[in-house]
Length: 565
Image (tube, rainbow, N blue to C red; front, side, top):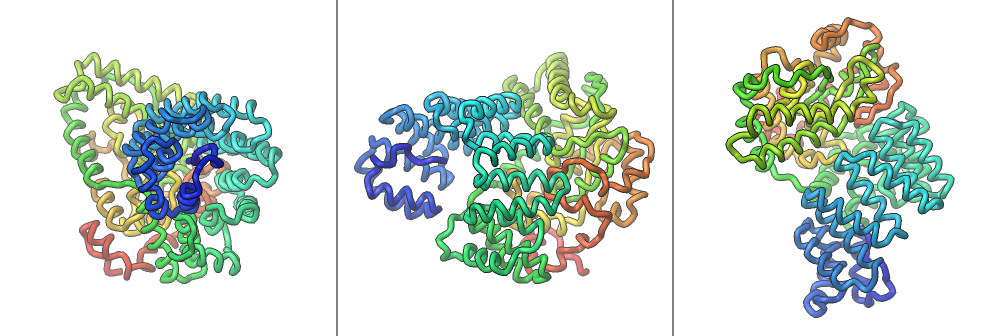
């Protein structure tokens, strides 16, 4: 998030606080600013910087108040826009997405000359599932700022998330033509190339980005693609140190990169030291409350009962037959989807965000009708039919290509009640794996999505238990055989046997091409993008043993002892 626009007007004392914020020294910035906030409570620059600090300290409600006060006394439209942008960031932190979207829109309208506001507005629209509108905003920004590489690069990133990697590469190329030295375009091209299976090209693109901007956070990406040179290892070790003076995000990136690099070099003890510190730092930047998750699971169990499913059985005659692949991250789901992608009747959809957005909107409607009931039968059926129509429209491009398509958003295990009501013809595949391997693999990843429970071993264990509890409920509440459990270890040990079970569950004929999943040419948008380009391997099974001396907090949270072997 940007600091006040007219920096020349900021007193020297505030300049020092602003500089502390730029390098990630939030406490120092707050100490410098506190007396100014007390003595100059109506000063625009003081209020805006205080709001920026409040966001960094996860005090988002305070930030909203400070930015709104700043807007009221802003010296001009540009500064007013900057504070509206701050409101947008704060509202996003409060998960008030509609208010965040409106704040970003106001920022863009107040100062259309600053491309940052258009980028943030587009991001908010995309996060809300309004992808066509987000694309429109970015295309307008490209026309308005034809020499600025940022809108092209951001549009490319959106296309990557939609599985349109080739189109994304065109946009990244446009960004590089605007500015060949624009490091984010090279870095994001690397991401797209990984998903297309072009690992060598991806390494080169990432390497170029880091040479152009050695201070950017991209070393974790590079370490996952190939060797990290001794020179870069030394630099990363210096950056990861507590006294490095580097921003927290840079230290986190360096720590995860070092863990990956030392794992590759066969030094798991050294790797885990960097990994645990990087996760500790990352955990301090995110919000996760296991009690909120526990309450969600209990509410889902109480609402989605066998009686509810019986009440609406056959009432929503949807002809759509998605194949939902659900489970915890790093549980083998990408392997299952890649196998299915080799089938001539199946189109891989990847991790689509549509269903949770639709289901949450329906939940809001039901909640507004009162706690006792989601409404009359006729109202609920109408809501479900409307939800199905929305999902059908958003996935229409997949339906044109094949008879069946996959939806591999793993968190849809929370949506299985709605899936049962909306898609009686759908197939549900639940992938699972040794919990210690699953949780460790999550702990080793710096995710781009909000999986905030993955940065602490105890959080991971408690979340895993809640996931198991909810899956046990779905197995009991849904008809027998509705969910197919696929164990990762069994699938890699006997892939043909496992594949036949999967295809039979989906009502698909056997096709040996599915066993050549590593040859399937399609974008893979998950953390397993590189792995599924290789034939079946079993080396990832039992990896927890490398770190068994460090996993006691995980074992306690999982409420089970570490296996003997």
